[in-house]
Length: 340
Image (tube, rainbow, N blue to C red; front, top):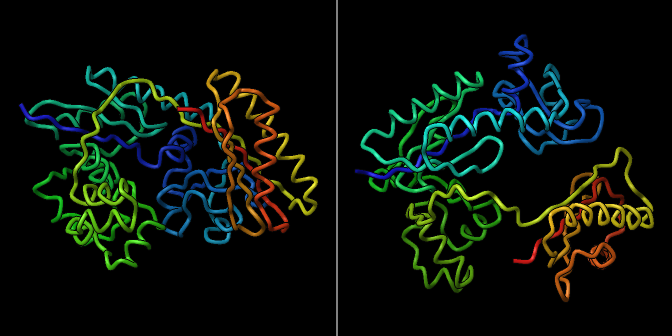
């Protein structure tokens, strides 16, 4: 009996949840982010397909989004509602009696045995729709990597299969950053080495790439481009590796004494979260977004892991000292990375 991995991805999840409770918005461009006021600072959490057609996407400043799509309906983020609907979806998936690995609010992997994974995929879509009214796309592969990438070809509300036999036919000529795990910076480095496509990366010499990208990353990139992935589908509870807090300010912080006070406040806030979690912190990262939208980070590794708020705050302020620019600041964040 064949073993398959299915990747379930809810289509435009947050926007779709909002449309479910506001049916009059169906077919209209919908943007969810911040407190729903595009005149204020904040970023897009998600956008409906109708809004995406105007170039609105996750992470885009709300002020830019309203310029690109002035007729869009802007709504505030309702985290509790999304978590409740997500829980309902995941319980529906678990009701199939399969191993389900939850990735977040709107994604999950499932391990499936059988000769007709498409039939299981259609059953998943039917069950999710019946339980929640939401549509989902399902990618099918022999491993998690193949399934994850297949989902993009099935959107919206479809099913698509990628296996080792069709991998290069589907992906070979696509840019390297089409792969799950390769971002724009890595793709740029690869391009500088004369590697632009998935096919070219798959044919690269792992040893040569190890010298350029690192002994672990280099060979891993080649395996990735070949569609190989041995990671199992696991239903073990997700354990976050870090926790953080950040704030976008409606008015830039011009005085860096104010910046220090805000970093201290955020660090104490994070320390409270850490205390609730119960795990020691090994490293503290501070994020600064200058006006208009340039983001930098600096971190400080603790000598010994701790949950102490004083030491977390001290590490955050030490990391802040790594920023040499004293330009106006629009966003600050503090993140604590847990000891392994």
